[in-house]
Image (spheres, rainbow, N blue to C red):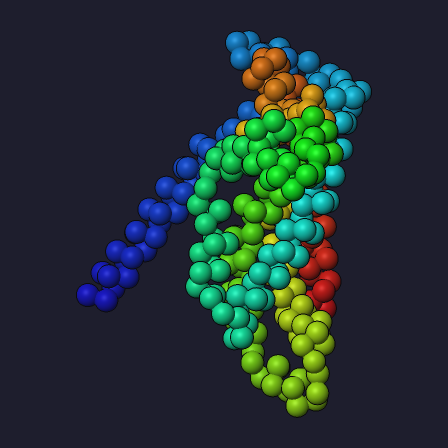
Length: 291
């Protein structure tokens, strides 16, 4: 009977593996292969003619591509550290035994994760609207001039950063809180005996213990930031003008608005290579930190 149960479990395991392989092939591997192929064609959605590296040659001569890539890098460089620091701060406070109202705090910071990025973009667009936004209305009540949240590219990027931190804290918070509660209490007890203060314990115990979690959070945050689309699309639509058009928006506009799917596929491959290189570098740094 034990043998039959074991055979049955193996069959179920094999069935789940096969289903996952089929889904991965249909929705990830096959579209990826098509993307690589289309990047070497002039595909417009109807017909495709092989043109070799022409899309890539045009791509690296395209000022709009460099502008979108530069803005995406700037957004990533700003958003990832800010999101990490804020998420870490919130996590430390929510696991601290002296913090009051931790349950309510968890609900408040977790709630944005339940909201669609499109909805989050609409919320912040309403809050930071120049002529109808709540923030400018509040500034007017205290005698201050309204801020050009939408017509100034840098201010619009700042609003995007606010929305990113608001919406992205929840996931990082959950991961970090799980890592924080798993740090052995004996480390802190030994530090207390040696007379270490809170800041010293944070620098010498908490941060080193969070290294694996930190690498994972940063990797996922960079990938998410480099692929940001829905929230920015609904919040600024890449504006003002094209000042805040990120790479994925550029891909969308090129592929769907201009019907130049082959060229958009080439941009997608470049983005894939950038993310792959960063992931490899991140893993190498993590491996060295364990030595």
